[in-house]
Length: 301
Picture 1 (spheres, rainbow, N blue to C red):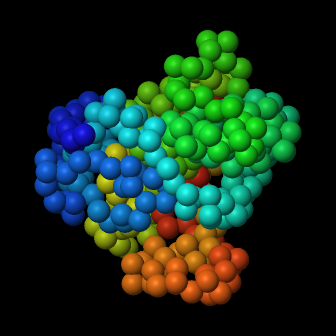
Picture 2: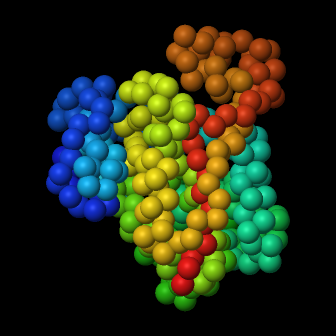
């Protein structure tokens, strides 16, 4: 599977663009995409192809990516056992997000999630009184969600029945929109599922954050698997264009263990060889934002 050039802006389809950052990944024509670079816990930070900036709508996007068909096949094959090993941090992170959604949707109801992975967030929502449904491309992750949590995730948007349209009280899109080639289509699919007045919860990196501006082209979340990069202005503007009213926009709170954080650095990978130290560090957590933002928005109509 090879990378293909992206000629038009994924949002406004303009060809009027400029180089934003020169890539660090080398010649894309000689590189095959692999599942290891696309897993949730991929450690290929700061490795990316040329990033382009649209001069018309100011979206920033990767200059090459796999075809949609190849990308879906790649994600369907992902296995990510490290994600399961670090599940406690995910539980803490998603618990905070769920509390935010409960503020905007106190009556709860039906929750739908795009990119559910192993079902951690939907299990929390289910235990909190929500009815849940969701999509996940990875067969490995869907299998865990079903066997461990009793949540039968869908494998594609095409498997969502028309009867679901306009029935959801909430749609969640955590750390997903930056991975898709057509963010407008994703947001419109979310809006179609929501009732009028339903709430969208979304998280993604923004390149006008302090972390991203400070580190510039060395920002770690510039990664091969990310196709789209927003600023706060372009993200909020796109949500409004897709029929949403912004309710809240704030720093994301992500909890990771010190072990996970340290072993992201290749120079500290030796910690894997110290079981006692690893056990201690896996039980100690740090809260990070690192340029990620949470947005909550209500469907206007």
